[in-house]
Image (cartoon, rainbow, N blue to C red; front, side, top):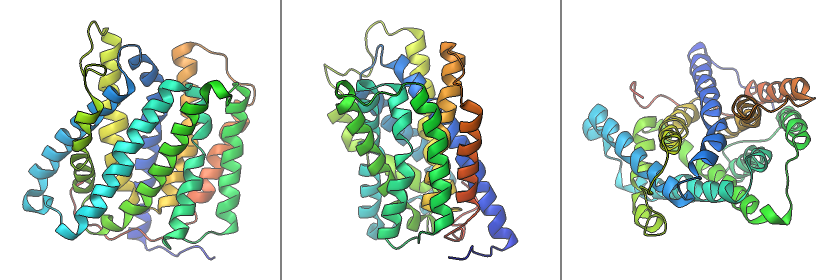
Length: 313
């Protein structure tokens, strides 16, 4: 399939989407490190409740203030928005956090390259995209790059972590479907409005996530645990969902998902700084393959950027 010929405006919007995706990978790539610190005092479900509550409050207030009556979605779009909230917020967050708590950060990073594969399959089934050989090669190269680092670092997929690993795989499938379901709405609503509503329509889950066994405010939680929660609700929650919505209006769903190949590299760098671990032997080659593969996927647009729904967010 031939590469699309984009206008200068479309190329500019696509470049904006790529920049947003790079920030998403940085914020989320450090998530496992902060998550492990938070789990010393907070249960996974409580962390998920914090993310939904703060994300809905901040993004909902900001969207309502900036867009006024345009903040209200069409009634016909509410079922899709609710499904996006269920898959992309509730199930995605809870399964990821429960999986991270039961497995290891390395295992979680090792499983991340499944997301673009799931996303492309869902997008093809939904007839949003077609698949061609160069994009397949790009994904394979990026997967090989991530695998060099992760397998050398001793990622474990044994039975002792099986439940956590399966939860992470389920999280990734939910996230892939969320990517594909959300994109058609981005030509109609600003990214901020869409992100706010998928959070607001997920608020029903908060009472199910917290209780005596999973308090929002645990006793004697140290400062580092609270700082980790602060990072989690601001960067890998508010900013990443908003930036992902911003990017999906400018690039295809599978291209957005392909950038997830960069997250394991960021996790490794974060571990080197945080845990003072030795640099993996094939790190340079892994970085070259991963970035090269993502670049090959990103340079072959299979969907035009959507017309902007609004100039603000």
